[in-house]
Length: 224
Ligand code: AP5
Image 1 (cartoon, rainbow, N blue to C red):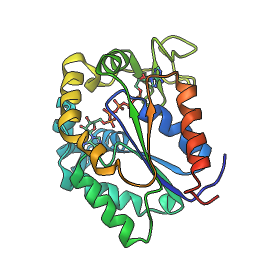
Image 2 (tube, rainbow, N blue to C red):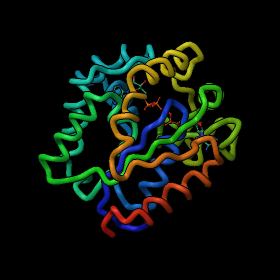
Image 3 (spheres, rainbow, N blue to C red):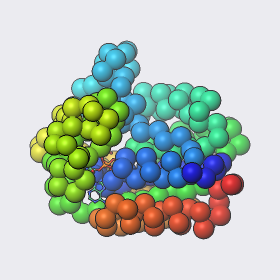
């Protein structure tokens, strides 16, 4: 692990491998990985006020309203474990959220060092998500076809694997539609920024991780 002072976001359609890659990249760089979808899922299962408001949007595959997400994520980013750097996965997801993040960065004297875009086809997304399983105990993600657990149905930590309710076929199609309409415009928003980089998320996972970590370290925008 290299300890860096680095702020990154990872963007891409559902199933592109954002969560899979973000976990490994954050570990390599020594920055905090914040998975917005997981933060919301935790709030839903804890039945917090935020979780109760977010639940209906999430189960249908729609987005949780910007105001709620911006308030929650900016509060989370102000916590101690994010001061030295972070990798945001799933936030921002709309141009309004990106403006909220910009405000936070300016107010705190930070900059966004890298914007990582992971691209995949919709066919690959649908096939990956239908085979995705996750461990509610530790959050680790597997794929029955491409990244299976050692023991069928069981996480390496010993937890029982489950399927996410929003990985059912109809909900996946809705998530892809929401991505095209509400999140894809973020590519235009960021593509001219310094530190914007595109990667092919359809390649084998280790290759994608290697490509991204190499580009980030060679890019020289993060202080080691
Ligand atoms: P979220 O949990 O963020 O879902 P998502 O963006 O749709 O992304 P996914 O988690 O489905 O996919 P991923 O790209 O992380 O892929 P993964 O690594 O798992 O959000 C869920 C919901 O929360 C949203 O729909 C919304 O309601 C709400 N929400 C979240 N953030 C929000 C925000 N900012 N604003 C408003 N609402 C928000 O990989 C997928 C599968 O493929 C896995 O099985 C994996 O093992 C496999 N895989 C990964 N990489 C490879 C590879 N290279 N080769 C082969 N298989 C691979």
